[in-house]
Image (tube, rainbow, N blue to C red):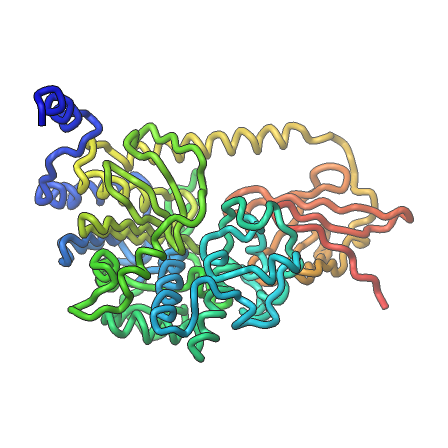
Length: 506
């Protein structure tokens, strides 16, 4: 190397973007004081953190409580819901079956679910496992009310998704799609001759010794060390316990429950190229395929906190990007009262998991994950929790201002077009099913299965509103009725859901 090249190389090494020397012991010791402080600042309940390095679990601790108002402490064996971090389990299970020759990731879904149909017949014929697990169906982030809190089975949800129109052309845009992951899970189960739940248990949980993990809330019955979900809305002084949400009907997209100890085993297998205790559970080339780029969620990456990040892509069931010169596998997950973060850096044999039991006003899980990932890679030290809290507060203030502006736009002194009793009835959507509107006293009540239950207040004309108790946690929900040419109430439009047509009496 000549002198000029050497000088350039040394300059690059000394760049402020270059990774600094990592003092792992100091990083771990600081977490013991940093995490409780951050948990208090976020008004959270509990959090559990695990760090894997060089095939060892080097940090596994819990902080806070399983349920606000009770003394039971969170530890590294406390079970939480991991939400959408389930998706990578589904993708890996598909890869394992591909290794066995039971399927190919390029197989059409209709090979295993002949009745599968999307709105476009050509897309239906061409739709593969890769398409389902990389969010490139063209359906966008839509359709979740079809499974959320409904009595529909997995099979019925997949049958009804044919009525969901596309928002973009097939394979041209990234659009996060839970129902397509459900579809992939059902298809791989059919290929294996068992349920998705059985595949996950037999091919992943059992070989890895993930004895506390399960694919359903039903597996939590009788378990003693389980976190309680909580909700924390804007301005509330503390988190409120809420029931566990049963999402078995969309399980391959988000139903796994686990703890730090079990998730550490999972991450160790992934960062060791699919190997566990000398046994190959997933072929390295298959893992490389699964974790390769398939979709582009963000075409322009502009991260002022991480200027070394240059791309953000989506693989199969997990996001991929670069940070300080290494490839990072990363995903978050969330379901009622639970939020999780997982990041893995195979080149550094590094894995990080953060599990929390508060949803709503909570970015602690991502802030802690980002801090640990950044510090373990030698990045610039920052108070990630404080930064995230400031951004969250800023976003909530903007949302409150927008809500106030909408309320200020109300046209005063208007009345509904018809007597309230005429708005009551059954309204139907071909995909979502029925919405029930009843009159209770002088209040209209709107129910869509179990998840949406709104008591409406008149806003103006035929528009009504309700505080957050259904479509969005802690936010105002909006409902608009429309009349037909004869002046009769004919439809109800639920903002964020769909428009439902009134079912005519026989």
